[in-house]
Length: 200
Image (cartoon, rainbow, N blue to C red):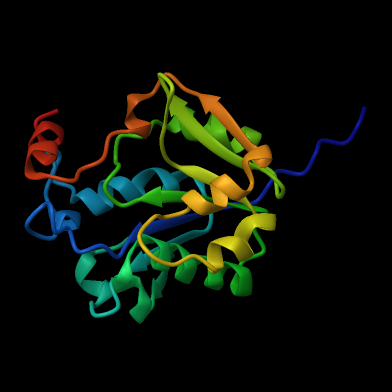
């Protein structure tokens, strides 16, 4: 019998350095119906399924005040205040230097409804030279998995467009995985989004 292919090592990188301006207060601390904060609920899936979880926080805050799970690696960089691209770059820089993972799954801190089986499906497609992006009814969502080959490009990002330029530059490496999970699209940007979520 052929030896099984060794399991791919995938890390998680969650972006949580935004200032929730559209929300009007720190949405990461907003409580859901089960009493968890939005950030805690969003971290639950990557912390349950991936051994290595990195979290990009604002440069001016104390991580201890956020009641984070143990073992989460914290990234804080003054540049993250300038937008999502800078947050991604700060996280990717640390991953390049300190992680031996083959790929990284990029999560957002306001998306707690992604299903476990969805992440399992995406992980099954991951590789060091692929970008895996979930889709629901033709709309692309999160988490996006970037093979290690693309980390230097992530580390060079800036501005507020996130990883869009990396996806465009490497279109031939992008695998779209269609999922029956609206949670890959559902984020919390406004008080109305939060009210819909907190009454689920």
